[in-house]
Image (cartoon, rainbow, N blue to C red; front, side, top):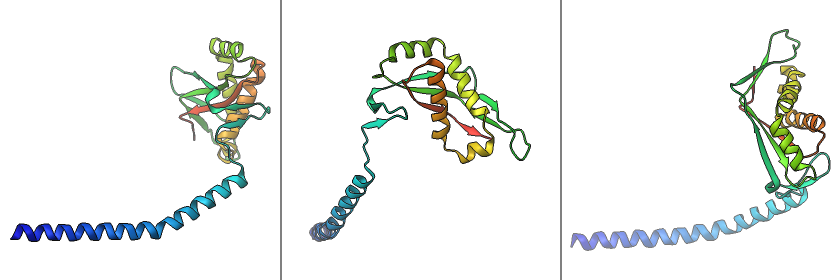
Length: 174
């Protein structure tokens, strides 16, 4: 008898759960579709395209076309920054640098080989860009702006347009 009562209670709870879930589903479905339409409208206004990116030089590339070249150091890099208004010695730390190269660029093969073989010049340009700023400037700039500046300088040194991004791994200022 007790087992029958327990089975009936479980059955009633299951039916109540299904009923409440269906009510919740029909109550929330219109708001989900409204939210989806809103997101679609906003993305059309902003014109978000996840696949195609345009570099500053105007060349277009897919994210899948990027090849990474990692510039490794023997130890964590500590570079002195330009003195700021406080007169204190400030520095920047990072572990390594990763360059994003457009593999569809016309000079990709020669530039990637040159950068891989003679990466000291790319490392030097990254260091020069970081050391040309004060801590306050680096704090107000976005990391992307610093990396874009470094990418432009690396493109100048190697006389190429295939470096489209720089990533500073473990980047932090003090």
